[in-house]
Image (cartoon, rainbow, N blue to C red; front, side, top):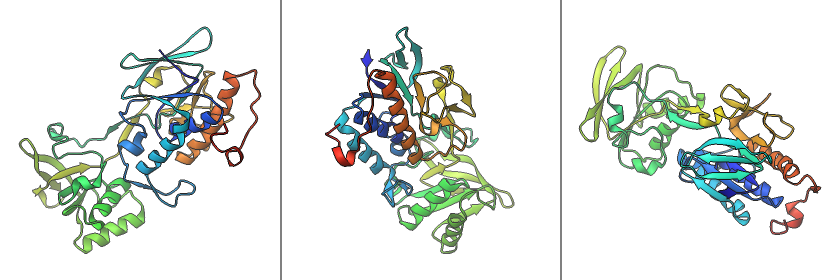
Length: 336
């Protein structure tokens, strides 16, 4: 049994920053995450993607942000249970909660903070019969490291920001030998600036743009060799390639947390914005996993929510103590 003051479910950026804020109140934290490494989507899905709306950082790579948050949390020595999804929660007579993971690891704490982002993700896959046979053999649903595609021919499918941005990045940085972007419509869902950049790169022969078309088949034996593409006017033709990257987005799901008796609205957990507590006292929800009026799904908003949640958690854990706000600019971190 792993015991702690605050059990945080989700080791993404919001969960990691919450460790720091809890540490300032001398509260110990332990984090559970289904991913094998801390960092959530920032580490697992797009570590090399720049983020522009973190205060004090005009631009920071998602992976670097996680590295910095880990360093910030390090003085408070958080514990981690990684590669194990939280499955069940049981409230004890004394008010503590026992959370058990899919592997049977049990954790006990008086406070649980859910910082699970958008939940468990599954890629939206194109309806191609044999696509599963080529996953990790030339078919990838996310781009973790662009260098993986150095000198390769890549076919990207999709019409949203992710498909546009990665097509631009791989072409402009001259990472891929050739970039082909396939989209079933002649119009795109992404930002107008990105759409125009793709069109400009296509006119410069730096991106091969195929619109009004979709990938309908995969060619190859043990490894991807090419794709069958069906054009609305020209019919079906084959396109040789090293990699096929369908970027149709991810389907989020709360997973087992949805069965914990929490009030759910539109696949998110309803909270009281006073302290981001849920309908179950002692359980809080912060970051993208929660919902309330005027909710903004931004990392910086999650940082704020985590800060207020741990202030409330302190009062719950130590009702006999008065918490006097101290400032790190005066005390530093070691002074807490």
